[in-house]
Length: 93
Image (cartoon, rainbow, N blue to C red; front, side, top):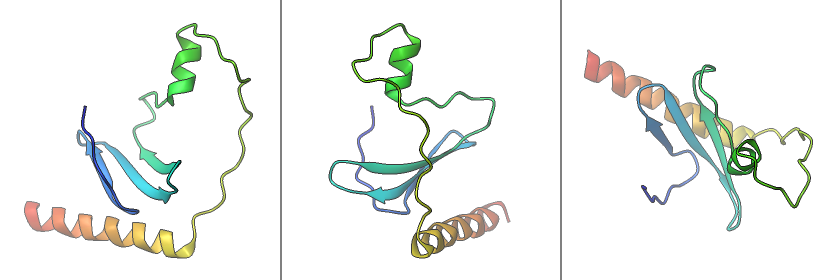
């Protein structure tokens, strides 16, 4: 298992086609974005427990739309992605 300390806007690459972006959070909660092919299942731990036949003490919550990212956060994420594309072009160049 890998343990990391990350800042908002940083991301992890898993293989060549899965990107996990840390979008911020608080001391108790992290907000992450997962960019993965639709052919892969991406489940959070409580969903996995339900699928494995585990019992849930808390009923499943209905989907609640997340607040939109701030313009500042979007700008940071877009800048990071643009920088990464430029870096990859330079390497492949």
